[in-house]
Length: 615
Image (cartoon, rainbow, N blue to C red; front, side):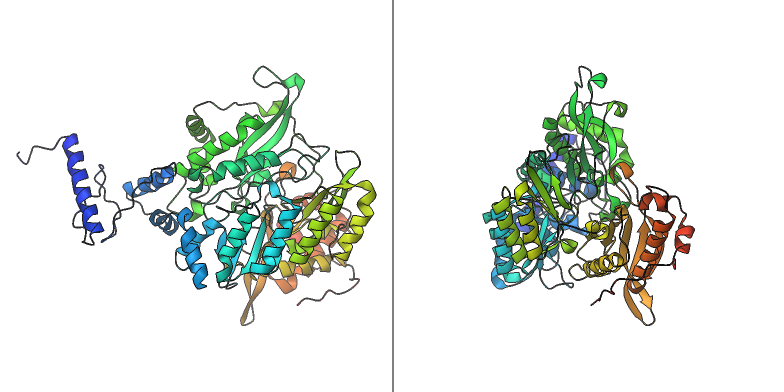
């Protein structure tokens, strides 16, 4: 054959396969790979480790993630370090490895720190030389026997307390290395499967916490969150995402599920008889929204798609698969669904989802939809009537979301004795005990006070949300939980509000406490003070969600925490004295410029009833 002659495509494929097999054989034998035979038909070289076989595509449904990684390599780009780690070792297959480390009393090292998160175990050094364990509670629903067991497990293998998160979920902290498997086995004994609770996975699916008991809701949503939970656990491709992912179901009731802050939001709406037709008869549907990530200053936006309840789970699965294929695997900062939507546009993305499903998605003009307007920002605190006659629920105040194991046991007993044995967590870092008979309300009040928990809250404390902070998170720049409690005490001693003001404290840019949607949002930072760097905050005003959706504006930048209470008190004092009739704090800040709000610093503040002490 002359030099000008070329191989046929069939001959090229045969020679490529023969050479690749030779390389693999040499690698398995411990010999160096001497050719670039692993190059695909495009002629581009893939990354191949000398002396080791190239990673091979999995045979199961999770191959779509592997193929997405391969496409990055085929076009000559580099995978980010986390994608390389997942490609070299499937994190779902590390159970025995985690057991071996626990037996040896060792924490993971290197990329294993990241991969172990897929089992809900976070090694949080240097903040704490211990594990944090995140659970996976669909819809935030627990039974009394589970809460009792979780409290016992906290005493046996963790720090003796539980933290309620902003996803209506629970976390353990202060878990020693040798207790890791005790936690994982113990959770499964309690029917809590936390696989995928961390790492690049779909977090626990949230729902309306009053599902089934809210007299104003359009539809129950906890059953949908549970269906979605089990769908994820039984489809391995759901664990192949390029970054974390959130799904929420909102039933249109009095307590928001904050679905507009999620990657996928299903929000219940109604089509009345006058707006119905053959495709959309009168009834309840879910409006599909996509791309919420308030830490990146974006809310989920309507897609125009309207779904029946029985369509939501399958459609969510198709959306996740499209994201697995299309999400960025080279830059972690851009590896969220929002950036695919920004790049492609909603129409292209929905078209891809329809191709994945094999069917078109039904579209409906938003003008035909009726949305609920019954949300009550204080409905998660105190006693309220249920739709079941003679029944009430109580929203229990938890100081910045923390619950001792003894309090958890007492709450479990209380829910069995006076309720139905259910406990419901909320995205506001508190919990609800439902199904209390009216004649037992006073007994429940007395019991809550005796265990050191409240059922009444000032407007500050009811809307207080704080992430873990620097006491337990290596990313946090401030001790948010301690500061949050101090601020609540400080402000309550000066103001008696007649309208709620939500206060969100988050320790870093990950915004776990969603500072951008708080009436007042504090983002932790370090501030230079003399020769020292001290805890401080960037102060935002005017965030919101749902019907009052908005991203908080940065008004005060890099404020040392010692100066934060006075600044907040000044602005709140100006609001109370200068507001219009019925004007909310958010509306007040919206009609003032940043400069005008900054000029309120130093506005006269009422004297405190008592000066709170700060450790």
